[in-house]
Structures are given as C-alpha cells and as structure tokens.
Amino acid sequence: MPIDNLRRWASSQHLTVIKAFSVIVRHRLCIRDRNVRRDKDRGDSMAEILPAGAQAPDFTLHVTPDQLLTLSDLKGKPVILAFYPADWSPVCGDQVALYNEILPEFRRQGAELLGLSVDGVWCHSAFARDRRLHFPLLSDFEPKGAVAKAYKAYRDDDGVCERALFVIDRSGVIFWSYCSPIAVNPGADGILDALERMPRVEVSHVDAHGASHAA
Amino acid sequence: MSTLTVPVTPHDHAVGPTTAPVTLLEYGDYECSYCGMAHPVVKQLQQYFGARMRFVFRHFPLSQAHPHAESAAQTAEFAGANGKFWAMHDGLYENQDRLSLPLYFALVDALGLSELKLREALAEGTYAPEVRTDFLSGVRSGVNGTPCFFINGTRHDGSYAFPDLQSAIDLTLRAHASI
Image 1 (cartoon, rainbow over the protein chains, first blue to last red):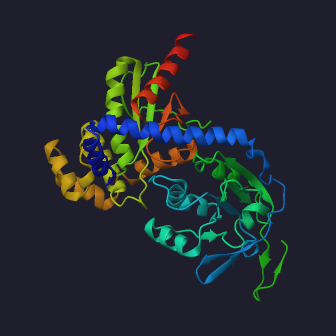
Image 2 (cartoon, chains in turn orange, cyan):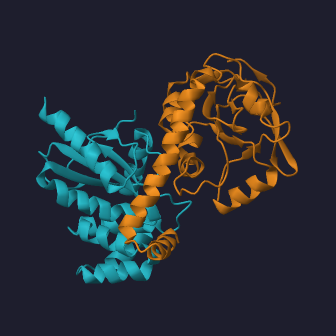
C-alpha cells in the first residue's frame, strides 16, 4: 500500500508523513515541469498529429500474443484510438484505468476503444490482467511505432507514442483528434463530446438472406 | 482547460457558506490512496480559508481498479440520506486500508444509524444512481484521475499538495476580489 511505503520512507528520512508527501509531490512536479519545458523546447508537436477529415491509416497489430486486429475490420462503427506512452504508470487513476471505468459510456455510443503503445504483447497481457481491462491493447512494437508514425503520433526522442486521441467515424475517416501534453491525462470528455457530435448515418436494411442494400 | 459541466446544486454534499467566494470541488474515490493523502490537505485548506471557501465532494469510484470504491460511496450516500454524510466521509478515508462491510457496519453503528437499513440499501443498490450521476458528471467535466479538484468550476491541474492548492485558491480569491 502506498501509504505504508510513505510512512516507512518518511521515518527513514526523519520526516513527518505530511512533509514526506510534499517532498515526493514536489519531486514529481519537478519531473512534470521538466517534461513540459522539454515539450515546449521541442517545438509544439501537438499540432502535427493527423487532423479531423484525414483518412485514418489502416493497420494490423497484435492484440494478444496470438491474435491480430485490423482497423478496417471495425468499419461501420465509431472507433476510438488512444495512443499512450507506456503501460504501468504508478498512478491509480491513469488514462487507461479511467477509460476502463468509462467503457460503458463509449459502448453506449456504439464505439470501440483501442489502446496503443509500443509495449510488447506480453507486457500488454500482464498489464491488462493486472488492471482488469475490458478493452484491447494493441502492440505497436515491430516495426517500432510504425502505426503511431502513420498517425504522426510518435515521439522520436523518447521512442514512445504521444498521448494522442483519435475518434474515427463509421467510414474510416478521422472525425476528431487531440494530442495531450505527455504528462497530462486528457480524460474522456473530448471523446464523448466528439461521439455525440458525430452525425448519425442512415442504417442500411439487411434482407432475409443477409444481403444489404441502402435504405 | 476543463470546466465543470454540472454546477453545484443543493443536492451536492457541501460544507461552508453557499455565498463563499471560492468553491473547491473534489471528485474522489474512497479506496484511492492518493485521495486518502489529499483528505488531510482538504481539512487544512478548510481551516486556512474558513468562510472564504466552500468544499463540495462528489463520488468518482474507479470500481474496476478498486473493488470497495462503489460500496464505500453508496455507504456514504446512505449516511448522507440520514444527515451524517461528512462524518461517514471522514470515517471512510481514515480507514481506507480496511474498507469492507464490517467497517461500514462499525461506522454506521458509531453514527447511531441502522446497520440493517445499510445492508438493505447496499443489497438493493438504492444509492447507486446518485453515485453514478456524480461519476458521469465527472467524466463529462474532464476528470482525469483521482483526486480531481475544481476551483470555481475550473479543473485544477497542479498537484494536491497543500501549497499548490492554497496558492491556486488564493489566486482565485484575489481575482474574485478585484471584480
């Protein structure tokens, strides 16, 4: 439990728990500020991810050690792509855990959620099991970051994906995209707003033999 | 910049004057250790700002990650329906390393409420809709982790260490005073 670790560390440093906590937070803030400064120095990569209106590049990636998933197989329903830097961040309400809680709301809009990072399939497998995730994590592992690069959501310096979100419409076109500063969890409100704004498409009728024709 | 989409209403759990110039609103999870760490910070802020600050709490249980978060939130709502929300809120955070039915019953007993009624309420999920409403309002407002603080409706993106929250609230107070 983090609080026990904190108490132990605090007493080893002859600090009260409150003082120890503020030392740790200041340290984390320092790291966060350093990342923000580095992002600014890099020149804003935020504006460069694929924008709304662009065709979403198709891809096929491992979703489990022995299964592949192809984006275009999901055509016909909205797809949310959540690129993120790495599994196993030390925060309980991190982006992936948050989306796991909000999954019913995404599903209510008929949308599929896919998480993508450069982590390998076994890492994803362990992480998904540990966090009880109910949506697929895709492994953009080999060639490294190739899919993220296609979406212009790869950080060359760090070798990880940007914290980038894409909402893809039923025909495979990007409807909305957003790149969050790497240290900031973007939450789910942008995704839900985009899904609600997405125009409803005429449902094609399917006859008894399963052939479909337009309404 | 994320803003609160559902403003504070009389249904919310609030402590402090409704006319206070600053409202600090927290979305929290009783089983989240970071929320546990923020709990004494909120108390310090309440002491420091006094009548200048109103504090509001809404539930944001990460129930996939925290198996007791949902039942703890419903227990707090049960206590709230019986006029004892804040005492239960404090009791849950102070004992968050042993959240469980026996703990809820012990807290309920200590507050002079009915253990049987709590048991029924949890079994029937009587207070689940309230918790869900809080959770969804948080999702739409851009809550991106727990604890998540909003100061006068704007998400606080700094840390929840006392100096950070204190200076953010101070800034808001000064801006408010200069209007």
